[in-house]
Image (cartoon, rainbow, N blue to C red; front, top):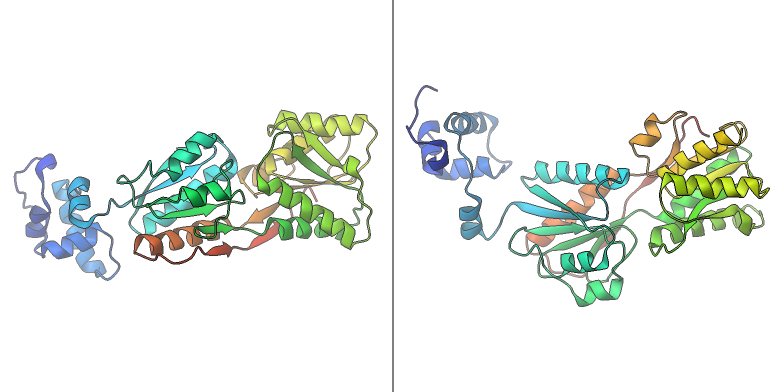
Length: 341
């Protein structure tokens, strides 16, 4: 297209795009909002005009006209944790497919920061919130129920009036232990409970670990439930090294996350034990470190794409006006076997 309007990019209006593309303003609006019923030919014409003119939607005007911002917030405990980084990517991709953008914030496991999320800190800035709480409890979320549509991830809180998406951690842990037992492992350690940890996920995974052993007729040995001072790789190394030095014997380790699985690989190597010949190692979350570690980690794999899709789907229904009782969705998991088992 050779035609231009002579306007600067900062002043280009929706009407200018419509004139250049030879379509109605409604059609341009449908393309800008990524509505699916616009034909590919029409979408191409409008997009070419948008690109030529440098048109940028006026978000303030859109909010005034529609009451919507086209933005959602994702609140997670820590951005630098592999699992949360991957979940942020999947949710961002899911939002993008539906014409939304995301704002990501981290709460750093601080209860006041989590309360701020619930207290509508984002009200007026976003159309909805996907939130993975770590410290705030179920009753408090129910009491502080925000006006902004909200969907929860994870195991920390499950109020009956709020949508919530998770995997079945107890079942996943049972599946992991059963896989290890099928390969002949009987002395299976759990790495680890963490001092001061209030998150529900560790407790649910430990429960599944214990249920699987009892179902197989294996007596529980409390020495095999290792304890760590923190969540870092170094903390995990110290926990498993202390057990080895104390004479605790085991032929497999179920780890609460992939970081602890990396800790197990390091500690076992330092002790001269081979993986998987002497000790099998099963991580949790199936993050990139599992796929690219040496040896490659077997891992309990939550379906992170399904988590993102289900969470966004529930949120979109809330943003479109659904005001019913909270829905609690379980998404699939799998056990991915690699070189460490």
